[in-house]
Length: 346
Picture 1 (cartoon, rainbow, N blue to C red):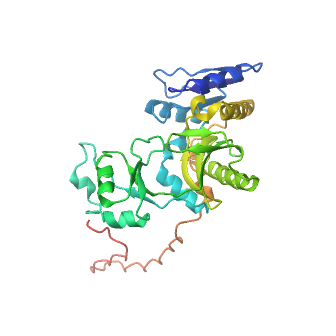
Picture 2: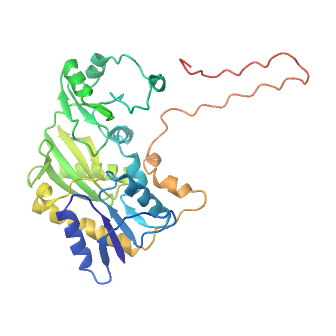
Picture 3: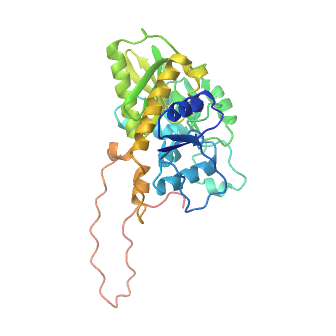
């Protein structure tokens, strides 16, 4: 079996994974080397573990092509390309999970190639007071990207909202309700069903060892919620942040590439995460190559949509209207256009 690992600045987590994998007879584990990649090349691995492609664009394309060649990639690169907080909240709410009230905001700035003519569909001005009131009067301006924390700013007035928005630049941002939590947790979920639950400090991004933080019933509820999210989103490894409000779980965030360094997790949780994830990858590698895609690329598209199967349609499917009888040949009267919606402002 051969396992490849793509990493960024992490040190302790990839090192511990490689050591654990290499301790097994018949297993080769190494860092993947990426240069100029031919379109028909296939990385020589049973599984590639990806910890950095969300920041390196060429890695995303290489990993997607690897999936097409039958390589298992964790996490699935097609799911990773869909990842953003607005989609996560929208989908989780459809699963019946409580989520913060969330509003997607238009970008403040755009690339120089974007002209006013490209923005004719945008509402102007934005009713900022209504937007803030819609999330309860207090909220957080956050980047829509689940990998960006630099624009997470708490606001409680329109002036504060506009100042935070003005600083967001070309970043796509959200305004989210401020959740008043009794307790805050981060659950590292592996393989959709194996969960490591930790007390979490969201301000300092630290896991805290506190065995009495939850009752047995509360922990069971938290695990079920986090596992349902990870499974529906098609993530083999993720961190699900959950606030407890009166004992009821409230989904706050889903992080597909969480910080798993020992300094963040603490040695207690670090060892459990490393062991659980390393064993999961070994089990995947034992299965051999993933099925390759056929000429229609349908499985590739299906790989990107595990969420869709769990959702009900947003609205009833519109029934097709009966077609009018065709005009007789030779008629000079212009044919009446069928009734249809027109784009406002076209």
